[in-house]
Amino acid sequence: MGRVLALAATFAVSLAAGVQTGPVHAADFVGVQTADPICGHRSVVGHIQRNFSYQVAHVPHLPDVEIVDLYGAHVTRSEPSTINSPIERLYCSGTARLTSGEDRPIWYMIEYGQGFASIGDNIEFCVLGFDRWNVYNAACRVLR
Image 1 (cartoon, rainbow, N blue to C red):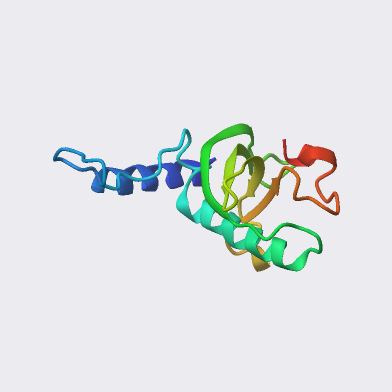
Image 2: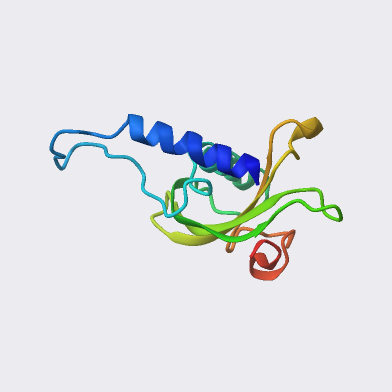
């Protein structure tokens, strides 16, 4: 859980550094607002966007779309590491806006320390209707 708190603190500091002090006008970019700073962190969203683009390009019969925004990201479940299960996991959900203008539910899991050769974190995700090979079971049930 220490990594989660450290990531949250880092995000809070970076967010505070970018706070505007003057009036906000219609054309000013004020940032993406999400319900949870970890699930909606730009590195997590960027990873999902890149891997989703790869998925639609390499899986037959998927529409040629990309994720342009992920909003409403929030934690649905947290599994701290224990003696019997040493991998800390954070389950999140939100809504993915596609380039077609369509909104689709998305569920994803962040596994801490499970990146390539145990360096970094692993993120598994499922966008409803894009799991053609049922990797995450019907309607992304595994990641819910």
